[in-house]
Amino acid sequence: MSYALDYSRSGAAAFAGASERAAFIRRTYTHLAGAILAFTLIEVAIFNLVPRAELEHQIMRFFSMPMSQLILFGAFIGVGWVARMWAYGGTSQAMQYMGLALYVVFQALIFVPLMFVAIHYRPNDNILPTAAILTLSMFGGLTVAVFVTRKDFSFLGSILSVASFLMFGLIVAACIFGISLGLGFAFLAVALACGYILYDTSNVLHHFRTDMHVAASLELFASVAYLFYYIIYILLMNSRRN
Image (cartoon, helix red, strand yellow):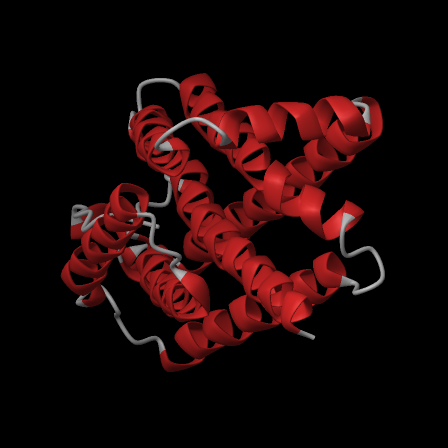
């Protein structure tokens, strides 16, 4: 999920040789796959090593705090900013990987409450595998669309930034006034995530430098995780209604 980032076109993958560009794209998506695998292993470790009662206690303790959603969203922005600063700071490759690792771990922790409900309260609904299939299908379809058309979606940057601020405003209003955001908000979040996937994939093709595979994979992972989160949320809401 990039935020109106601008790169020097002279070093962009679009202007590199075919073999160099292909290697950059391969490294980017290999790192993305590694980030998704690391995320999955962290979740498996949490749910297998932490007792259910302790996990539930910690989740309930956090969400009983006033403005817990706002605190979570603020942490999401703060950690995302630090992770990107490390990933984009081309001074040290180790720092770039630390940025990606930080973001993956933090996302894994954010997902715990939602996954806890899906695993322990809706075990027969296959919510997580269904959400994973839907997420990968949507991500794959959008990725293919960008690679086939080779369209530059960088114009979406300002639109997505405004939409993100509006979503943030809705979350703040919900926290202050006790409003339930519901399915409508979740579908808007899915649409926003799809927009970011188009934008980030386009940046991989047209704007990222060929030495920015770690940063590129972080942006793609952020968009995929955002999409996955709200697809799980929608499936949970739908399961409760049925």
